Each structure stands twice: as C-alpha cells, then as structure tokens.
Image 1 (cartoon, rainbow over the protein chains, first blue to last red):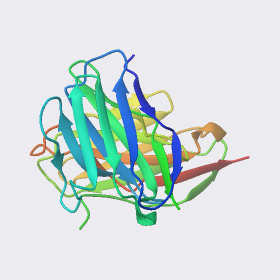
Image 2: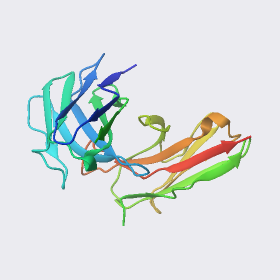
Image 3: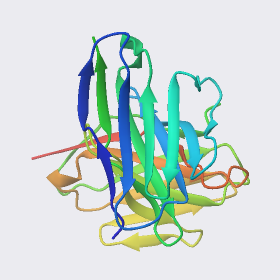
Image 4: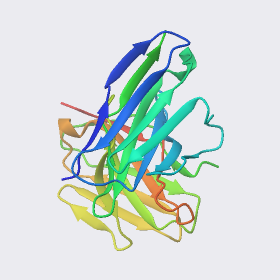
Length: 114
Length: 111
C-alpha cells in the first residue's frame, strides 16, 4: 500500500527560529501534495497545495512568506515554518495524492514553539 | 455556514451499542464523500468511502442523501477500539482533489 513518511514527528523550537518538515511518498510518485494544520479540537484546515516543479497554491489567510513550501521532486515536499511564534504551535499533516492511491496522509508533526 | 458540519460530541456509549453520526455539507455540487477516523494525536485514516446507494463494511454502514446533503455513519456492536474521532470529509467538485474536513465527532466506547 501507499506510504507517506513525515518527519519529524514532533519538534520544539524557540520563537524566531525556522523549522522544516519533510513529507515523502515512499512507494509511489505523488503528483500533488497537500499541507494541513490542525489546532486542538478543531478540524484539519488546508494550508496549501503543491505540485511538483511549480509554486504552491496557498489558501486564503495563509502567509506564503511564512510557510515556505518546496516540492522539488515527485516524492518529496517540504514545509518550512519561518520565524516561528507560539501561535504557530499546531499539528501539521501532509497528504500525497498519486494516480492509483488516492489520498495518503503522513503521520503528522507536532510543533511547539516556546 | 460551515462547509461540512458535524456534531462534535462526545458520544459516550457502552460496548456493544449501536451509534450513529451525522454530517451535513453545504456544496450541493460535491461529488465524493468519505468517513475518516482520527486517533488522538495521529493522522486521519480512511475508514470508508460513501456511495449514493449506501455501503457497508463489517460493522460500519455509511449512507448518503444528496437531496438533504446529509451523510451518516452507523457503527454496530461498538468495540473499545472504536474510540476515536470520526471525520466527515467531502471533496467539492469545483476544487478538484482538495478535501474539506468536518470538525469531527468524538466517540468514547466504555466497558
């Protein structure tokens, strides 16, 4: 079955620093990857959609200069939270869509900014 | 109005009980519907797709009513391991491939 690996699982960082989260499709090529954010007791909210080799499409209200997305290959997308602040603390989840696999979610990254 | 609405619960039921969750969606043109399960601090996992004719997978039955824009999930003979948050998910047809998640309904099955 399709597997999406997401790292790190959790990270604690200081305010003002940047954090990079990786999302890899291990056994299929992901034409599209999605990045979601989930605050406690809330739904997953789509942040951006990325296609390999092109700029990500951000949802309304998501700052593209703060949440940098790079989708350099068909198996890897990265999300960098720049100049992180405590309000960025959340659960970030990626999902990948491949032609025969539908949607597959990564295991998520719990970010805590102190 | 939210695009996908669910009763947040929690629903506390004893083992063996039958429990039903409901979900409504606002975009009448939506084409694909799913139920996902999310355990605490974990990623969502697909439980089942929802088809117009209704579909069943073991103890789980999903139904779709397009006229009322309503989706349901029925769990029979609840197990302790069914305790989780159940997410109603819709794929709006005009935003191809983007899933819209409900806030989820929390289920707690007790002894």
